[in-house]
Amino acid sequence: MPPIRRGAPLSITASIGQLVHRPRFWRSAEDWRGLPRAQRAALVGLSRVYDLFAAAHAGCVRAQPGQVPTVCVGSVVSGGSGKTPVAQAVACFARALTSGAIEPHLLCRGYGGRERGPLRVERGRHSSCLVGDEPLMHAECAPTWVARSRLAGVSAAAAEGAQLVV
Image (cartoon, rainbow, N blue to C red; front, side):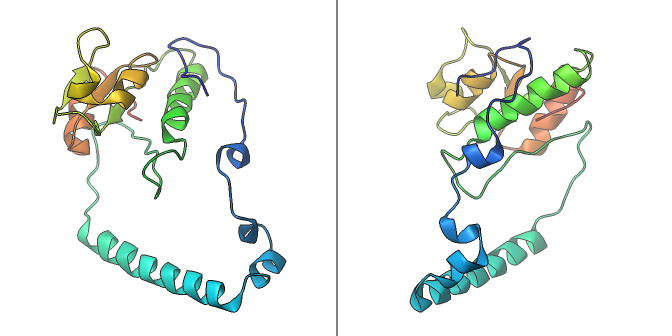
């Protein structure tokens, strides 16, 4: 899917089902029961281990309110799950809903880059070696920030006038 350009009209061309390829056994109980018993047991066991880690993580993490509304786009999958186009679509949708009254800012951790931030990404000035490739793609459609600390990134964006951070 091509990146969404700043000021582009809003159009949703793919449903979530088209973006995410689900295993057959997620669709119905019959498909789940059709799996061999060992596979079902392994999947149930892995889901319980995942639940334990998720609960431990939730117990260690303390939510901190940002200075502006924030929309988080995330996934358990680290790459290739469609987070970048979804974040761009959310920013474009927010801009369209407010008839341009709100200019959303995008925030990335800058995977693959050296910069720890917070830093506002500028396409001709910053390279992918410095900020990573995803922030450069985002910078084509909205003001974009790189910050390893998400709270620091939201604060920096808010200080520059952001009314919404994605």
